[in-house]
Figure 1 (cartoon, one colour):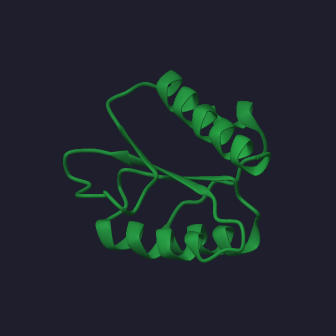
Figure 2 (cartoon, one colour):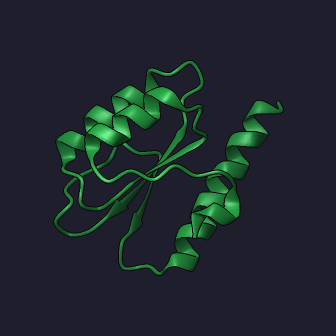
Figure 3 (tube, one colour):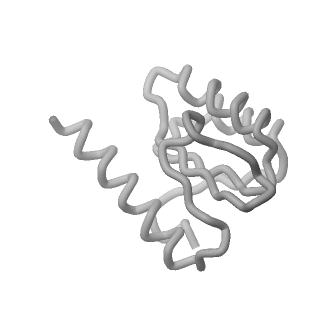
Length: 101
């Protein structure tokens, strides 16, 4: 569904996610609710170390743990795909406006 917003790269595990963060100039990274707090922290640190760090959206569930300070925006995994696309689009729009200032 996020392909509607532009080119996407999907990964199946934290190692693939780290490789994608290192290999691509991503504007937005979406963390799945199944990542542990440590995995989120490690991937967030990696993403923020990039010359042009992406925005980070964290999907959360009651079991995913605290993500404050690790992600730019959190979204409950209970929301449907329309809310995910809406939130991602808003984050991308804010990011592009910051670049144009």
